[in-house]
Length: 242
Length: 192
Length: 192
Image 1 (cartoon, one colour):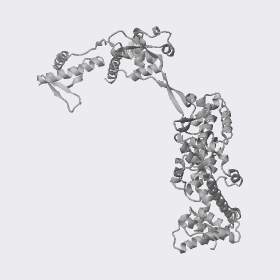
Image 2 (cartoon, chains in turn blue, yellow, green; image 1 turned 30 degrees about the horizontal axis):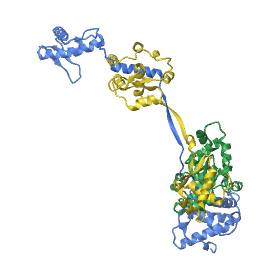
Image 3 (cartoon, one colour; image 1 turned 180 degrees about the vertical axis):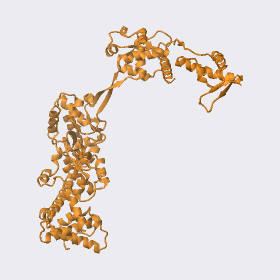
């Protein structure tokens, strides 16, 4: 543990087990490519042991790494089992590569931060005039839009000539006359539709139905017919008053 | 450029990075006392003269600015296609059919007021121009179409605009409310 | 300085007036098409070399900035750029040297999870951007650096990243073997 003694036991300070391993590897004071993985495993396990004896909280991933390193150590020390893939030597090599890689990125980050940076070492123009892009509208309209617009305006404001289309209707008087005439022979309950003219156009039929309905109400008021309807909008029946 | 000495380089950098014009005193606070900053400024002023960027003195303060004759380069125009609004096209149509016509007349024909912006857009588009004042009470300004208007709409002259009878024949004079009524009757027939 | 021709004056003015680095295309939009803007930029770059203000190329963009050796004249104590955390610096370096790179790959290299905030800070600074999803299981999002990253750190291109050639030659920038990382964790788990 003499090597790791150089590192303060402060588990909080490490950014994960790999970070701790890299720091421990550096204490070997050799190129990362030449470190002794076995010695590194000893350093790490010793460090964790120490931390435990001091009853420090140790995060699970540090313990997982410790277990994996213990497994690696036994693989490296025990006689080689050709069945085990990858071999402990290869695992050790990969661990060494991971440390190299992390170390390389850490150094690259430091070199990046040390470059001449805008706002710290070099400065941009303090008060640039600025470039401007003026949007110029390119108006578009088609000749059809133009004449249709004039038609619309003219239609809206020109004195409108109202032409009422001739439309077949049945007046209320005609309906009263017709219903009174036809109901005289109806002793049974008869639907109101039976009193509408045969072969009428849909328009006339609508007008006749409305007029006949009013006619029936008028005749009922006079006591000349009786009305029956089961519910609102149900068929309306009538017969001559008994 | 001539090789600049260290002091000139520093003054140049300080002026470039400054967010406002600087006095000789401000500059000296950066580059250090004991230099003839004013002499350096005058040398830089001469070096930059005629370039796209010039060093200028305004009262007691100095700053870099882009050369005044290049202002047009810093602005860039970009055309955007835009469709005329309904009010715009109606107003244009009324001017085309009735020119010269005053604003009050346009409003009377449209039956709706027009905003100032509507006429501005038509003039900006180059289709409408002021056409003198009418010799009537209030001497209202009148408007008329331009040659660009004819060119844009592919008309040889205003006489090429379809007349009222043509519009009626094309169904473009059918009042909207009558058209609605017909539609209503049709659907009623379908449901009877 | 040598008398500058009109095109050089215009390019110089546009770059001085711009509030951010410009591409050749941006400049051409102002000075007009049909000129060899790149040749003018290279001439200006040479003219300004050695002065207090220099013209530099960062990726595809060009801008003027103060010469780096004059930092002591310009630096203002109050304006120290916000310091990045260690995790932030390492994550930025990993993205710059490996881009495009997924979050899992960054975590594999660092051997620790990265907090959401770390990537956010880098994106907020404008140095890192999402760079599409990788066509591999889980379609992970990848990250890459931005033109602002090159400008901020004074890099003409990613090839200028310190030591990138040596790192690549040493195999330290090879794709990260995520499968192995899982294996290692699994074996650790089995034997724990």
